[in-house]
Image 1 (cartoon, rainbow, N blue to C red):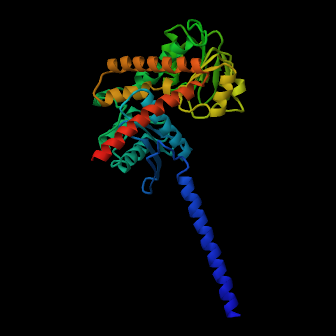
Image 2 (image 1 turned 180 degrees about the vertical axis):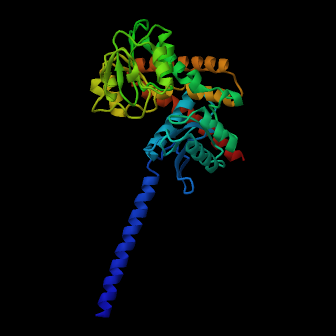
Image 3 (image 1 turned 60 degrees about the horizontal axis):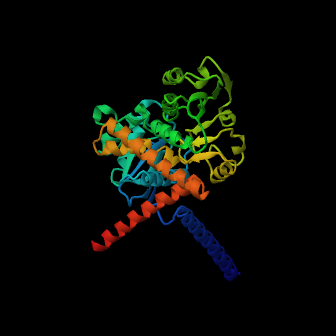
Length: 399
């Protein structure tokens, strides 16, 4: 009887051990689910119990140089999202010909928390990554120049700093939005679109979207729709961009604009326009809603705003898409100029030169081959990264 119980117990222990081993194996597989020939080099999860900091850092690839990428603050960011954003930065920096790799970080918290609490979290985050010297933080959704000043104060490296401490405030001057306007100008020639009088909808009228509307307005483009987290504003007669920016700067919503229809937040995708700029979160356009798009041209202001399937559907419908890491590279180009002590004038000149050249290169090749612009752009960027990786390999062999 005792022996039987012992055998049963041993079987039970063996089964439990097998289950634990299986769980470990699955966890290991999950940890490496993003691995490919480019990276990621590091995926780091951070928890600091005293402040309650929870954060994720992905250093994707540093073959071209130290990784530059923004610090996002939002309560619902996932590891997969951070990895995808880090990979977008790898491709973006390579496509722009910058001496930087790609990385991204996220602090899992509400960016609208009291400023003192936000400063405590950002400073704690900075201290935890002090020795990850191959990553250079920058501003992103939920963080700004002031946050980067806190990071700089803690660890001595950051981009997108306030001008008072030697930075070029890329959000304030609209570096990314300026780059989007250049990409739009180039792309308009590939979809038979006259910019003067063209109708624009911006989904995400924040630091990127508002400046894209402003710079495109200088080229004669008419803003007819704008959306933020509260809702969507639509006025086919046109929206005064400067007036709308003024409202947003006082903490109001696009819905507080006095004229036009006030619609729900997701209505922006179905507004009739010529140019549609997504400038908010990833994956806002998917297979289940892409059919609502009524536009000729999409210029991606946000990172990974379309799913892969949605981009293929647009291609089949002859909607031209300028991919994110080609169109919205203005911010990181500005950051790279700042990191090397350049001026705002130099930054704008460099943004225009690089984005004009790369948009032209990608769209010309896409038109010639019939491939999606993203496929052409990814191929171009990967070739540059892989070439840099060869040089790194040769250097390490010599050492």
